[in-house]
Length: 378
Image (cartoon, rainbow, N blue to C red; front, side, top):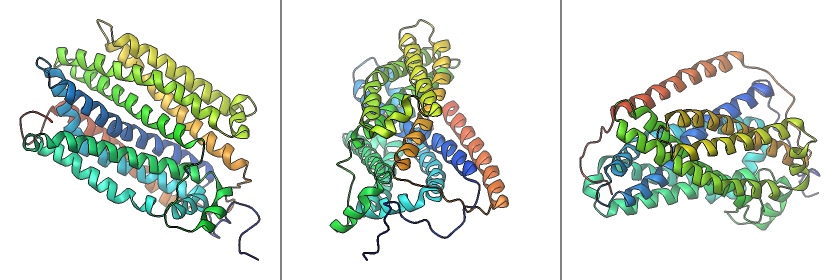
């Protein structure tokens, strides 16, 4: 006897679920979408801000620097929203798939522990850029790119964990190997999963820029028109590349998992098809907006198309997880003892928190630059 079960899936804890599985699943999907939108602003906005800051150093480009200032000032708030909105889906993931997620996290060891200090360092970087940009000099550019690098590393760690938890068949071998830090580096889905997510973040960052231009247009028409076109170029260009990454990710999936999207599971086939259609339609709209004399209607439609795309791709991600775990004979916990008071309290606070964040974003956009220092942004 070696203490390991015959099934590669760890045994569930003898604890009932605090709510029906469909409620937990719905909250997982919804809160993850909120986290995704904020995270895409952080990662995509940071990359766009760094590139735009370099382009804006040339004479006669005041719009570039105005955009960089807004992105820089908004970044600490956006990072706080990303972390806050990231807690809830992580908790629901632990409730539904805790025996897999906890195991993969323990196996990753120091890589997983590194997330918290990395986030703290990145946080300091965003605050330095937001409030001390004029005094940083050339160091500001280094801090900006270092912060981006940290964001990308954090994303890679999460991609490792989310893919490793789908491979319980590897848990025993990794544990037996010893060591205090393991990754899922040999998984053929890891790199396409990671690159698809990061490129999507940059593309959606471009949509955030276009949306900012749309809001600014009544007060600052020249800047608003420029920002809409500039963000549209980022979105359409990066999305065109990311389409190939998406298909790479799809075809890197194990055969039984990929087959779910080819007809046997109608829901999976539908959300994938709708997501691809919505994504390509949105890309076309933003490509047209990048060159349109009046980009506002196209950008507005593009934002709507993007929201549909994000919903579909989150559901596709869920179908990938379901398909991968089905091949491992994973069964969700059936023992349920609902805690309705806590569920209702959470829903009330979720709505209140979401409305508060919406108000904060609106105030941030309408306030312009509230920074403490004037001067060039590195």
